[in-house]
Length: 232
Length: 356
Image 1: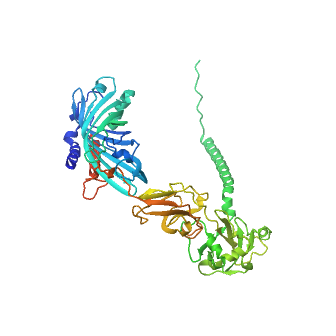
Image 2: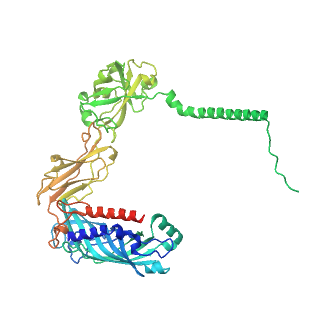
Image 3: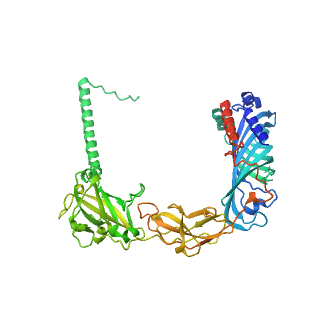
């Protein structure tokens, strides 16, 4: 599985080779002052809590939803006419939880004096389809994105003086709605595109799920993030 | 009727030279005025440095063979020194001491201005001569060696039995070569070595943490003591009973701004199920070295019990094997995610360059 994950990232890097990365290959310029989109970066904050259905996590960490900080980079490989660009994306994040150690390894937790700290680092590699036809062809500035892929969650735990760490992986998905901000001032948006290559900036809200439970149950069937992003 | 523009002035060569001289004269006047006003403004600023020489700051450079640490801003005599004042010896090093062969030493309160005759003769005990005004010989490196704390106490100025929580400030005046006699002494004729006497230990710490914790690590917390600005260190003690007098120093300390001390059961040599009592105390800065100052009374006991503790990864249903510590840290022998992130960074840079 490690090899698969590495291959995905390698593909992402290779995807940036000049032949593929050339902006014209993923879509035509259909508006004056508008260059084709090549990639996207975004940063979001959300709530994530391992809830695989077992009580293992809840015993030591009865409360807390993170927060989850998640950054993402998407590279668009091809533009589907009248729909939007598709490509691959990599996201990495961090979340942290605080709780107490228990005097027994299972069953109801009898809390000890030891504090417990759990940090997780999700790393997601996904195929991305960004449906921007509405924003491009109509005045409605909404963009919809769907993602499916492979999620890995690295984690580490400190209970008292003891330390543990682990990694789980599994299927992951996400659905995003974004509000593009170009409509506020199109002339300035075009100028930003010409000067900096920034096609658009946007706010987004994303619902996602992660089944990263193959070793330790650290997936979250349903979590969300919200934040800002830029397309280039 | 049309309005004509005003005719332009035409000057002869003679008139031009007159005009230029007039302008020059005006500028000269203005420059003189500016110079004078600047000088007037600068006088109050320059006066303190130009007219008044600063007091020479001598220093106590050694107490009982110990030199102060580099970060020691103040020299202290503490309760231990005062308990044996006759055998507490110290050195005073003079600043600008070249050519000074002997000094007349006076003890004074802080800002006592013992260089002024009326301060030395008043009846308020602000300044008193040390060693009956006998001169002291200045040795190597402009240092007067082996003065005793008892001499300071004998002046009646320095109180070695009762001080404020953060100490009481005093000064040693060293009059260069000549007895100050009945005159005011100019700054170049004397130096001042400040010091404090602090015989009052810090307050007993008030414990705010659980007094009977069970676990693999123990954290003892306390409220900030009243004299927290003069605390240099906190010490952890261990004992087999709640009697603090039988406790021994563990050697575990916390810095001056600490609010707690943490120690693991293994650090205390405890196996699961074993117990011990822990105490903490505060040590103030009244010493040449950190940790040697006045030490407060030990806190109330914290009764700790060592025990195995378990978290998420210890649950029988959880498998924490095959792990990398984190994406940023490569576990031994495992390909972590550092290369991933490096690749991602490269991708962003390459893509950015291509787009540009």
